[in-house]
Image 1 (cartoon, rainbow, N blue to C red):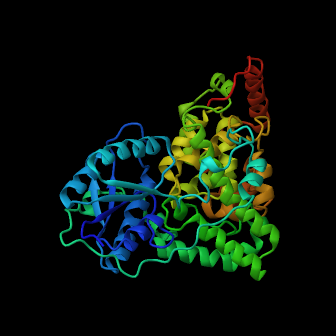
Image 2 (image 1 turned 45 degrees about the horizontal axis):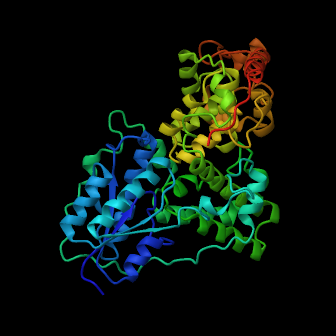
Image 3 (image 1 turned 60 degrees about the vertical axis):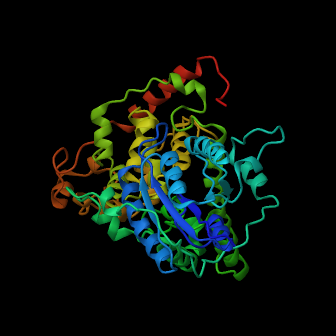
Amino acid sequence: MSSAPVIVWLRNDFRLRDHPALNAAVAAGSPVIPLYILDDETPGQWALGGASRWWLGKTIEAFARDIAARGGKLILRRGAVARELARVVEETGATAVYFMRGYEPSVAALEDQLKLAFDDMGVAFKRYGGRLLRTPEETRTKAGGAYQVFTPFWRAFTKDLTLPRALAAPDRIKAPSRTPKSDDLRDWQLSPSKPDWSRGLAKAWQPGESGARARLAEFTKTGLATYAIDRNQLDRDGTSRLSPHLAFGEISPAACWRAAADAARGKSANDQSIETFMRELVWREFSYSLLFHFPKLPEEPLRREFAEFPWLGDAGQLKAWQRGKTGYPIVDAGMRELWATGYMHNRARMIVASFLVKHLLIPWTAGEACFWDTLVDADLANNSASWQWVAGCGADAAPYFRIFNPVLQGEKFDPNGDYVRRWVPELAGLTADAIHKPWTAKPESLAQAGVVLGKSYPRPLVEHAYARVRALQAYEQIKATPKKENRD
C-alpha cells in the first residue's frame, strides 16, 4: 500500500458504479484524487454546446456530492488537459493516472500523447474500458475492416458477447493528506444567466448518477414492456430517455444491458421489446465504431460523392427550421421540444433532419451543429453518424430518395395531434384531421381555432411535392459523377 496518491482522470464518466478506473484506484489502497479538467483550449476538439454545458455543471455538482459522501473530494481544473494533468501530478506527487478510454479522434490522440509524456516522468498511465460494451477493435469484418451496415455488425457484436462484471460503488474513497487546489464550479459559468433558457431543462431532467439509475429503473418497470411499439409514437412517453445519462457516463451501457437481460429472464417485457432496446444500445456502439474507424465522420460524408452535393444553404430557412417556424406542425413541434427541454423524441429527430436536408437542401452539417449545441445528449459519435444516416451519405444510410412526408409522418406517429398541441399551442384548437396540415383547413375552422396562417402560424416554407422533386433532381446530379471509395 502506497501513500502516494492515484489520480482518477474523469471525462464522460460521472458515476461511482461500474467505474473500472475508480474501482482499481480504490482497490490499490492509495489515496485517490478524482480530477475533472474542463479543456476549452486544446485545438481539434468539439467544444461543448450550451445544453451540454448546463448538464455538465449539474452532473459535476451531483458527482462531487457523491464523492464527498465517501470521504473524497472532486478536484476541478480548467485549461489544456496535458498541462493541467501534469501540474496536478507535480503538485501531489501522484505515481499513477487511471482513466477510462475515450474514442473521439482528438481524445484518442491526446491519450497517446499523454502516455508518452507520463512514461518519461515515470508515472503509470493506466487505461480502462467501460464507456462501451466492446471496443471498436473487437468487432471487425472477416477482412479486418469496419462494418458499415448495422445488421451484420449486430450479429458480429452480439456473438459471444460477455459483459464486464458489475462493479459496486466504493464504500470509501481515501483522500490524500493534502488535496490540490480546485476551481470553484461557479466560476466556470456553465449555466446560462441572462437570459436563463435552462428552466425547461431543469424541469425535465435530473442529471447525476442517482437520476440515471432512477430513470433506468422507471423505464424497465413501465416502459420496456411496450418499447418496440411505443418508441416511435410521438404522443407517448415510449423512449428510454437514457441517452444524456449515457452520454455523460452517469450510467454504464453494461448496466442498461443487464437491466434488459434481467427483464427477459423475469419475462417482465416481451422478447421483441427487449431486443429492440438492446439493438438501440448496439446502434450506439456502431456509431462509435464508425467514428473510431472514420475519424473525419463529423465533418465529411462517408460516401464521398456527397461532397459534390448541390446544397442550397438558405440562411433564412435554416433559422426558421431552428426556431420551429417551418409551417409543418410536426417539424416545428420537434424543434420546439428541443429548445424547451434539450431533447427531442427519436422519431421527431428523423423527421426534422429529413426536412432540413431534403426539403430545404441545407447541409447535414448545419443540422449536426444545431443539435450539438442544443441537445443535452449531444454525443459526437451518435450525432454525426445519425445525421449522415438521414442525409443518405453515411453508413447503412437510409437511401437519399427516402424523403419523409411530414404530414403523413405526423398523422401516423401523432394521430390525434397531441404532440403538436403540446409544443405548438397556437394550433391546439384545430381538429386531428387538420392539425398536421393547417393550410388545408376551411377558413371557418381556422377562425374558430384562432389560427391566422402567415401571422399566428407560418405557411409552409416549401411545398412537399415540389421539394421532393427538387431533392431527387439534386441527387441525380451526384449519381452521375464517378464514384469514389469511402474515406478511411
